[in-house]
Image 1 (cartoon, rainbow, N blue to C red):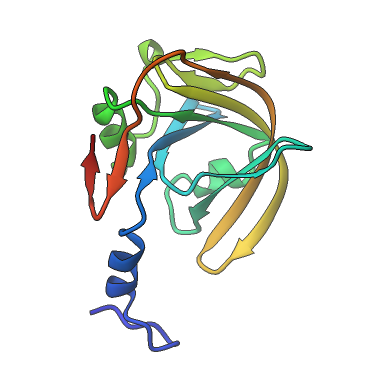
Image 2 (cartoon, rainbow, N blue to C red; image 1 turned 30 degrees about the vertical axis):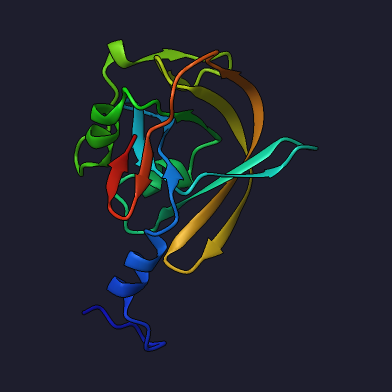
Length: 160
């Protein structure tokens, strides 16, 4: 069991959080080696005026430095046909995008092909959040597919 200083069992806490069904996204940003992506389910809307969204990244993530120093990022909300993409970008050491997986959006950020929706963002603010950093982005461009079903994650497994 994983206890932290507050006495909370972190494994049980994570399992409890898993009872909240979430959509799956891949967040991307550009690096010197090309665009990278990582699978997240921490995405949330914040504001309509201005258009703000947020997600968070663990400070120990191998992608942390790239996103912490980025001027912007893009979020691609995955469809139920993109479980393989979700799995790929959830693995350590597997974050570089293949040229056939994305197009460059108007902001220059990589957005995944066939996503249900995409949002291209500039960094609005960053906040400390325990072992994570919360990244708030201002949406500059967005698009949504006319049809499709979302990829859902619940209680440690994909749902359709």
